[in-house]
Length: 80
Image 1: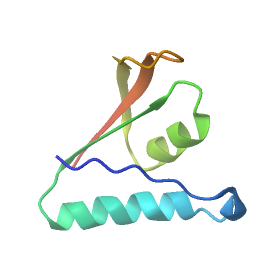
Image 2: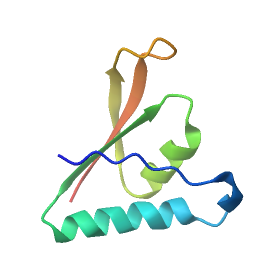
Image 3: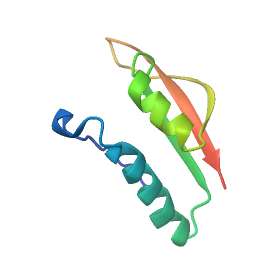
Image 4: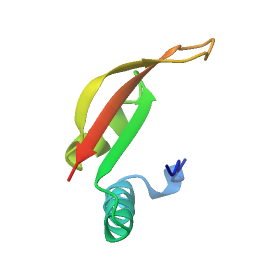
């Protein structure tokens, strides 16, 4: 299982680079035979939630972790 953490500088906001990056990552892994993708993010991170939903991911629920600030993440999944 590959874990990727990605960030795009605020300087590039509004250029839709996150959507392009998400599409490229999915395409790259699809070519390698990957057909199931999962993403989790903070409950307050509306930007990432919007990006993954636009990419076709479906919200699956919450994940509990040990983060003392916010112990829950919103989980999304995409099956191709």
